[in-house]
Structure formats: structure tokens, C-alpha cells
Image 1 (tube, rainbow, N blue to C red):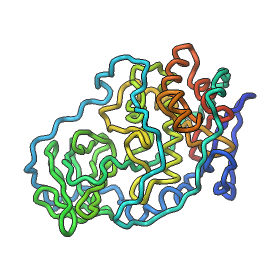
Image 2: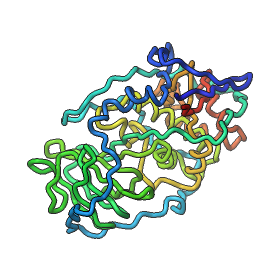
Image 3: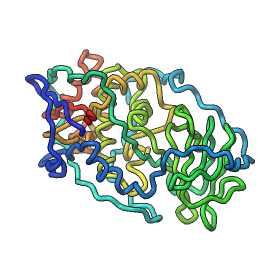
Image 4: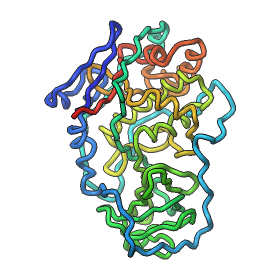
Length: 383
């Protein structure tokens, strides 16, 4: 099961929660954390009919025709150039809001509990909060959780490619075609499904790299994990299925400059992880958990990954904001003024986090300022 190593002022305590308490709503701000066993009905049950098994290339699969131009090779994420140093975060003033309506193509639906943010205000951030470091379990590895991010919505076509061996599968995981490396294939909705170059395919397909370091190209960006394409009438929906921790490498680099102080980046990583986990419990719709814009969290694939964002995510692996045993919907925005306007003063100012880190506060103190009364916890998988 997943447990919380919940840190409080007087030290560190470990708290286990019985399954019967997972689904009770918290009074103020949280959705109950779940064991991996109980994550299944909350996060994955509604996906069971469509989640394919890891496809294996078959010798008799046809190779897709590749009439499109050669697509650019991916930039190595850990050597990508960092943006110019600036105290201003990269995210815009657009507030995060409720997800948009469900897609027109029907799919299984799953309800999830509601989530509320803790009561915070700019005044609550005036005094630094001293916290003891969160205990790290021996040989800790964060649970493997897959998040589904809509990267293209309501578009007429996309250009798809891969950087290595990959296969196209249907939603049951059956291999349909292989794709040639680094060759772009235009995808459009057809009369009876999808058209990829000269290929006629079902209305729902996955583009799945067959190697662990495989990437998928979509229009102008490379993405880790696999990519789902769904025909919705004459439009397309494109969703990236990616490991939660790998997703955060890009989110942190998209939401805050990679040259920000490390403790500001760590605070951003934890806030982004908590926000993402809430939306995995309470997805936007049956096809994806959340989008890739400022309305949710900005996500650009590997082009917004940097050494510093990998370091911040890895150093805080599995850490989330927790309140009374639940996950906090950790809202944040660029400045205190936007937090006050968009979230009623509830949430983290990214510029403020940057400045607090420059003054010597660590990431736990920064989070304590912007989420008073909220503790840190870590997801742990138990047999």
C-alpha cells in the first residue's frame, strides 16, 4: 500500500491509513491518498478497457509509408541550453482553472472525490516556517504512476515521428504497423478512423516506442512515453502517456526558469507533483487527466528539460504536500498579486519562491510559507 511519511514540527512520524478511510472527504483541502491497490479503482479502472499491454514488434508487421519530410532529431534533454537568468518565472498570468468539457468520442467514465485547497493568504507567508528534513526511506523509489496529458486538442492534423524502433497499436495493444525512425508521418481523421500517410488505421491508436529511451515526435516537440491519437469527428485529440516523475522534468522547466535557485525549483517540483496527483485522482475526462497549458500546468516535452530540473525532481522524488492524510491541490501562480486575484490568496508565488530561495530559505521553508499548516509526505509502495 502507499503510506505517508508525514513530517510535523516536532519530528517525523509515519502514518498508515486503512482502506476504509481512503474515500472519506477531507474537511478542508485534500483528497485521500491511496494505496497502489486502491489507486486502481480511482485512477486506472476506467482505463482498463483501453490501456494496451506493452506492445512487442512482430516480424510480419508492415512498415508504414513515410512521405513526409525528415523530422528534426531530438535535443539531448540534459544538454539543452538554459534560458537567460531572470527572477521572473516562465509561467504566464493565466490562472489554473477547472478542466474543459469532455471529448465528443465516448469512453468509460470514472468519478473521483472533490479536492479543495487549504486556507492560505499572502499574510500567512510573512514568517518563515522551520521544518525538519523529510525522512528518506532506504533505497527509496517513487511508485510508477502514469499520467495522461493532452498535448493537442481539436486539431485538424499532426505530424508524428519516432527516434527509434516503434510500433502502432490499437487500444487493446495489438500491433498494427511499425514506423521508420526519424521520418514524419502526417495524421488526419478519416471517414472510418485515422489516416497516417497512406495507412488506414482505427479511430484510436497508440504510437509506442519499443525501447526505454524511445521518444515520440508530435508537430514541434519530442515526448517521453507513448502517444494516444483519437479521431473525434474531423478533429484529433493527442494525449501523451508518461511516467509522473518524467512528466515533472518538463513541467518544472516550463513553469520556472531552469537557472532559478535549486530550492525554488524543488518547491516547484513538489507543488507540481501534488497538483498533478490530484488531477490523476480527479481527471479532466476519460481520455486525459489534465492539459499542457497554463490552465493546468505547462508541459512542453523534453525541450523544457534541463539538468537543474532533473536534479530538483529527483531530489524530491515522491514528495507531495499533504493535509490530514490527503493530497493538497497545490495552486500556484507567477506572483503574489496573481495568487491573490486568481486563487483568493491560496497558493505559491513562483517569483516569491525565487526570492525566498535567494535569501537562503530551503524548499520546505518556502512551501511552509505558502501552504501554512500543510505538511510534506512521500508516497511509498509496500508489499
